[in-house]
Length: 427
Image (cartoon, rainbow, N blue to C red; front, side, top):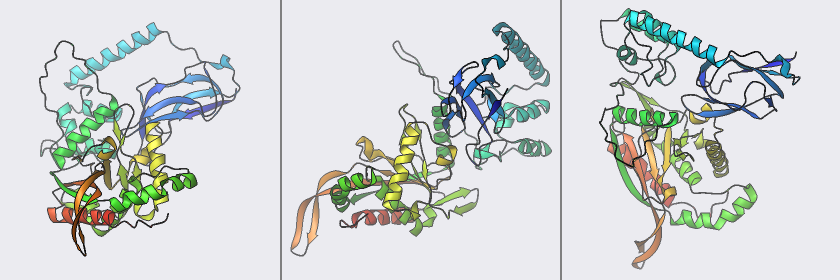
């Protein structure tokens, strides 16, 4: 029998494991090459994984919600399409009994050691970390305060062992050097007719990240109004020919990204991160764009090296990332490495907004809707009132390292770039 092993794919440089959230096929099903086999989730993004071969699924090694290391075999496909190779699965009753036995054994073990199984925590801990913590009698509160050296502050085996060396001498610190993220417990009444909706995995991550960012960074926001009349006229003039030639819709966002990238090069203190008492000035200019998903959640794909790309290149990257985001086809690398973020409130007809900083960045820009407004224009023969196209720009920044002068100069430079846009520019 010729078989093919399906392994947990590596979806990014820093991704070492992923959770199986859904199997689209079950044992005994026929599957075709490029047909969706399962959906997996990392701490950043959900992805559908297609089958690389045709055949019949003869073995599924992990159930839904299982956390699986990269490279581990998760399913076996018979390439001949012979269903006779399907392994006999245990009955539901046997599975239930075995599960109950395992749970009881784990509860007895936890009770004997005085520790929990850490299931009450919102953070992820590997089975090895949990095992060490239970063996050493580490409580949940202790474990949650251990500084993690893994991706996104994840606690690794080495972190627990290092903590044990100095246990009792000093309290553990969080990866950001700030107090650990804690959710205030508020008693919320439920009234007749109210609907209770459980947060999905992504919404929980968003909630935790937003809370963490507000606890880590002192947020301040500066505002400026920009006259983008030249930009509006330019886009109106070339929009149809651009779409016909490039087969892409031209929005204002590629121009905003270009202007932001230029301002970040001029003011590198805004293209930075904070590591305790150190400031990291980023060499790359990687601009993230907040994208609203059909399910109401939000994700921030990143345009890498935005300062090196033309309007055409930025348009292609932006449209591709936005489409992949909405169709759940982003890879973890697509949403990593951002050094600055733009959130477009104008797409919803909003004047502007004060978004929360996307850690570990130190600033985020809100772009508002473009509106026609009366404005006083200076001319050689005197002031006149004219109709101009204007928009609000709001820069929210981390006041630990970005002061008002730096933020103000950055924002003024950005507005100048948009206001002085060449209406005769070609692309």
